[in-house]
Amino acid sequence: MKARKENKVYTIDEAQKEQYRRQGFDIYNEDGKLVSHAKGKTIDYESYEAVKKELEVLKTERKSQKKAGE
Image (tube, rainbow, N blue to C red; front, side, top):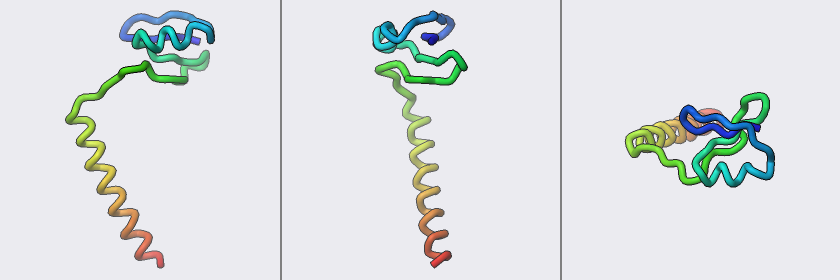
């Protein structure tokens, strides 16, 4: 298992997983797939708003497709 934060990468075991997450490290398995995000991560407000708007558009499209299929 790997703990990764910025340019730091450490090989850790299961017992150390939570300790590194609390310190802001993302945890990856041996295949390089993300196992868990670091605690306390945030995103910028502009990114959040863009995703929120896209979600609303997709919800509206889905509703109209369901109505057309009925």
